Image 1 (cartoon, rainbow, N blue to C red):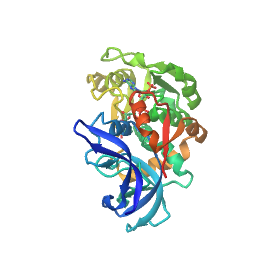
Image 2: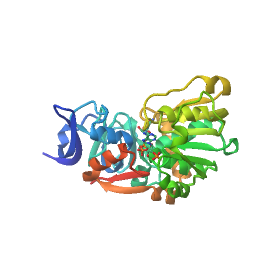
Image 3: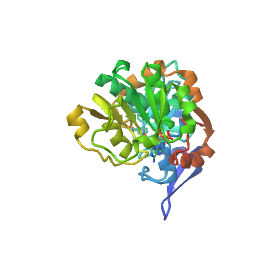
Image 4: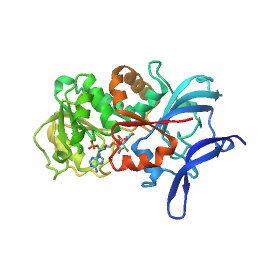
Length: 328
Ligand code: NDP
């Protein structure tokens, strides 16, 4: 029996439990490409899956992990051959399909994106789903026509994974970035990534006015709830907000006022089922538009055995930037 190491989530009588286990090769799910996984990372959803705090995992036993970078070992898919370097984000990995925290993954070739030649597997997972989502959010603002000349852009949850990459990308593209954070002690870190000013989380977590003073031409929000509602009320006439997260809650206590009186647009960002051409475009942009020393500065590395502690920390809002997981 051939086995490999994996972080496996099992169902228990009271909920779920996650732990390192030897996984039998024969139990890999169907797919036309088998990948030797080199790196994965820790995203907020991985925290939910490992701790069992939300019903992210919908099949048991499940190998957790929503994204990976690695090398194709075998393939019957026309686009892929052994030795190809690939990235996978979402598509149900770690939720309905055996995921990334394992030495091996078998997936559909249609889910894979070619690793851009200018990125290493480790860099791709330092970016990970959080960073790719930040890029999708920036692209939504660009499609709307928000440019550096439109005015400053706010990033909420700025010291987290999506937030850190969004701050670095926007700054590199020439935007003036307000980093909204509940961790003012991370002000120097955020300025190092390119933030022009640091805004206390409290400025966007109070009671929501239908319309507040116009402050930002655009926003990238990974927090949701009252924070997103306040951000909408502070968005300038004709501006746009890209909503991608729920770290502060799933609800949205807003009114139609920002939309019908200021023509503000709210863009929904989904990384999981995002069509391939847009994924490929996002990864090409990440290769060229993300400053590598800044990526390195926001990243730390762990091994598979450190996942449970890191999962709890990310849900507690204690992880700064990005965490890559070295596999194998
Ligand atoms: P992180 O935990 O790294 O970042 C979230 C940040 O939000 C925290 O660092 C913190 O930033 C802030 N935050 C946490 N709790 C609260 C709170 N109660 N109120 C206000 N702010 C809070 O997670 P990720 O960056 O990996 O993910 C961020 C969000 O984006 C998650 O909800 C995740 O599910 C979502 N996401 C969605 C995707 C999609 O496809 N739509 C893909 C990837 C992520 P600070 O300390 O600076 O305030």
